[in-house]
Length: 319
Image (tube, rainbow, N blue to C red; front, top):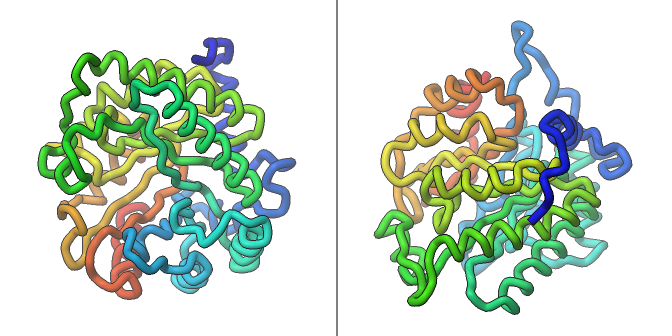
């Protein structure tokens, strides 16, 4: 676990530089475009990105990230969030191709969303996931991406993800262990990864992504234990709440580094929510949130029609 050696102002300065594409030595020419800092009535608008996941949903055949970048540029997004599992390879050539295509399309690459799980009593298993996270930080650096999305992980006692959704993310610990054990594993493992993230100028944004982060208190327990690291961030997902989303969203909004906005055209892959984005936008405005709104279209409708619809909804609410 990282020692609390950083001041709040130092952390804010770090986040400002990273999210606004300071980190010049790291991002080089791949800074956000002029459209990202347009002002309307003296108020900076939130830049919009789209997750490559919006076009794939873990289907057998991957939707090429290159095509997502092309679609995003055509529709007028400001950036593309890359899902690590959707990448065709981790070769330098492939990553450089994505970086150049985004740059030539006038798009930033604000976040790399990865999957890892620190909830395991097996120390060697946790080490594997720590190594994976550090490796993904290196991938983000190569692609000029300033932020990496993290999960806490989960006990996996509820079964498959579909079964987890059926119980709204609630799981019991493995026999002989408690949630306190799991929180310690997650905090310690994330803290180790933050050391590298600080060195590389990358934010690690933990998401409310079920498991230990199903409840607001659980997510904040992890975040608050590590918030003195200037590389610690929070990815706030509008669709990952059990129960009333707005009161929970309001509790987390002051800590948000980036926001993922879900839509469900054609019915959701796992569930469907009717989210009031004007209400969500108002909550974020009250916290002076200026970061990315990253679309995750999770419906069954063809993304070629559902993503433009989703962007229109978000623009109406946030602009």
